[in-house]
Length: 149
Image (cartoon, rainbow, N blue to C red):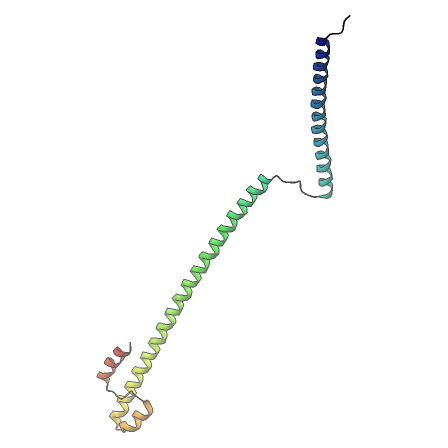
């Protein structure tokens, strides 16, 4: 037999084909080794009680769920703050209304006391020095209270 250039090329093609098969086999072995290593790692994690590594997509979705829950909770807290502030303001208005009524009642009682003492004959100078600026008669008291409030 003669050795030709064609035989040389065929042997090169055969070697390339064998090299390609070896590369494919190497990739398969690498993948199998990786799977085995991952299985061993999972067994070790299970024994120790450590969680498995998570992919970035799992952690991203968990993060988004956490952010959504946090925002909902913050909104609920803000609504409670607003509601408590509204109730505080309502109580403050009620307190101020009661104080106003007490002051009006005091002024009316002071005016009626002044009118009753002036009818008895007490001197208006001494009483006016005790009561202060409450030197008015009962018909004037309503006008005075309207000016104040």
